[in-house]
Length: 153
View 1 (cartoon, one colour):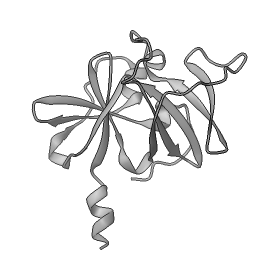
View 2 (tube, rainbow, N blue to C red):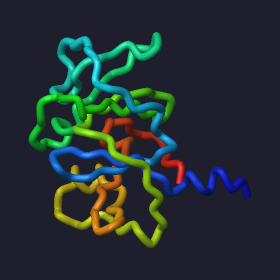
View 3 (spheres, rainbow, N blue to C red):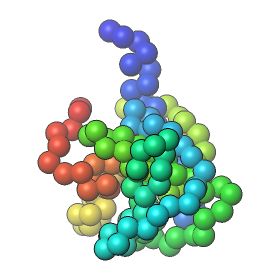
């Protein structure tokens, strides 16, 4: 077994939105950038901020707070765009701040709670517990509306 693959299997990039911690699998993260000027796209969904030019590639940018229906904050020096790749697509996600990379073992992750909200359940892959914090682990395919693609698990 390739140990480098096994080591990165449980690593998550942690970021914050409205004071809560979220995590995404590090395998999906390409780069984390400071927020730059983006070009608005006519008739795009409300949570799509626009597109940016990232080293010659046009990348759509999503405001995650708007996508989740939570209070958005003004973009400041802490704000970041996390560029993720999923199913051969690159997408940028605006977050309040990106703090760290952590490793979570399977025993540190609980199933998402059943709160009766289908949308919330679809977005959440699990709840991580680390150093007294709860970290909402996201299902990027659902959050970014990349449907009909088999999970890699």
